[in-house]
Length: 249
Image (cartoon, rainbow, N blue to C red):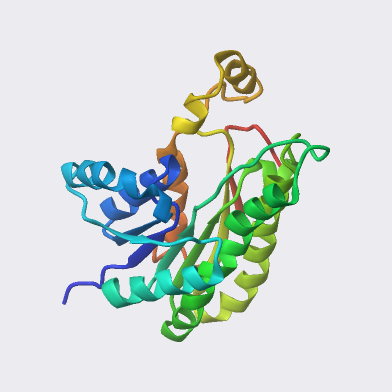
């Protein structure tokens, strides 16, 4: 009898880090579904073609994770098309950076809703099923700036710090049932977003990292794969930094 393939869902799956996570989990033998915001529809054809060229078959489901109703609908669609979720990676996130002095309520709300409330909205519909089946892996992608704070990011730092509070509390609810909940806190990662940073600013960032380079999306994905594994059953409530030594706690 062949062992059941785990179903992994990655929110924000079309982004630089999300894509690497999808690739790694698929290569590790999981059935993978990437969720994406409806506004990213124009990226789908190219993204899917690239995955197919890599020999990977990754499912796609649209949804707005900042909405409780749409998250519930999205996860219901995942269940209907692909089955019960074993591994959930909450990776969707946005930034609306500005100083407290200039920050507007809508910039605060957008980041809190997309980066923090979404973790509750997306996890809630599948949590009970994980408890009932006695297996589950929930992995929340936070940030080094949720650990140390960052100028001009009160919204983002608050949301990312809040994610780990969610992790620690939910880990206690899942522990006796074989469901683990953990946080990964990446530092600066080389993606299209960081590639767009002005060269002098990028050099200043890199000079502050003990490893003198940005992380690779594959290095974040490797940490996810570690936490998602069946035999990684005793790590829960942890916040694993993947930041090249930028912040040590």
